[in-house]
Each structure stands twice: as structure tokens, then as C-alpha cells.
Image 1: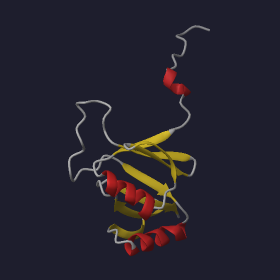
Image 2 (image 1 turned 180 degrees about the horizontal axis):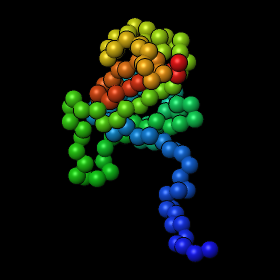
Image 3 (image 1 turned 90 degrees about the vertical axis):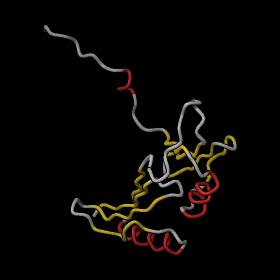
Image 4 (image 1 turned 45 degrees about the vertical axis):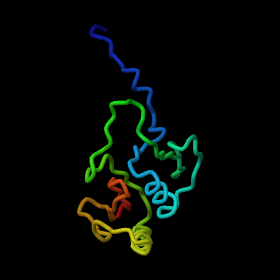
Length: 136
């Protein structure tokens, strides 16, 4: 056989996202939101600027930005990420009712999308976009 051998990247060894970190502007608001509104269990708190939640098999961490001195906070009114949480179809509506019962504004009510998802969108205290969805 002739030809160039296939060059593989060391990054091909990655098999999963181990954890997701949200860099936080409003620490008390964000912590209260993820613990009290969404009810995520605290897995561990490593410092006053780092807390981890176990969300199914995944870890979601809140962190105060500090890795680089030049890092700028995400401007107000700008989301830095979108998280999508998969649930059953009936749980989309249950989540919507629970959020509104806790005073959380929905961006739109639960909606059946033409691409086969029932979706619910809302924001956390830092303005990040959160989605609860089910395949329909």
C-alpha cells in the first residue's frame, strides 16, 4: 500500500465532556438559582469561588472568573452559554409550572418545535440561556 499514513490528533482520545463551567457574575443569585430553583444537588464546594453540582452523569460547576487577570466578565445582556437539559415530554410542562411558580420568567411557554422537540426556554440570573426539552 502506498499513500500517506492517517495523521490522528491527540484530541481524538477525548470521549466525553467531563464537566461544564459557568463563569459567574452574580455569585449569590446564580448559586441560589441552581440550588433552590433548579434543585441541583451540590456535589462539592472546593472554595468560595467554585461549586459543583451533579446533573445526571455530568458535573456542572459555577466559578468566579479568575484564571487570567485579563479575563473580562460577559457584558450584561449577553449570554455566555446555552445549556439544554433533556427530560420526558410531560416533564417539560411540569418544569415550566415549577419555574413560573418560583417567579422565573419564561422566554416562551412550552412549545412543540417542527424539528421534533418540545422546548422550554428561560434564563439564569446571569442571563445565560437555559433549555428544557424532550424529543417528541
